[in-house]
Length: 262
Image (cartoon, rainbow, N blue to C red):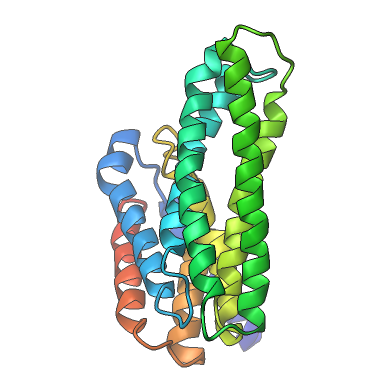
């Protein structure tokens, strides 16, 4: 048996023992102990990327507001799985109110970035995506306004829930793509990978208290992703200015969370 085979066997045994040692966390422990740590990591991430030059001041607030749509989407999906009807009128109105706030923040962000003296190709690309996002917000809101009006008037309609949910999902995708465009090119792929493979799925899941098994089922891939970002930005590349403390806190938070699973 050569040396490489020995190393592979040791790695396999160590990895297997970690998998066997992993334990499920109950819903109460998840809500009280795990979920706050995850929320802290996500908050650290957004505070960290806001340090990039030309990163929009209102982008984090906009993303947070878009994420609040998720709970209403799930209610809409379960209450009116086929067609919109009176049972989901409250949810429709809740979405309309949230979209008004999102529209306001979006317009403010667009106005500020268009007046920026440091516009370059990446900013222009981000602005194009943000303009599309803003137009989509207006379109979805108008659609829901009409739907709400018909429900209030007692007029029957055949509005399929699927198309509303699809448009709302597109808002999440659009805002994430815009965010990535504001990250300097040399770091963009690193943060894009972390955003779509760690931040977005966790952000989507922590709003669902009943889905406490998500971390348990995806712990190894999430662990790899956060360690990869930390390794890349502290060992392989120059750590972006001011981000060292955030990376350290995020990593420490994550390690403190792992004790509940091993």
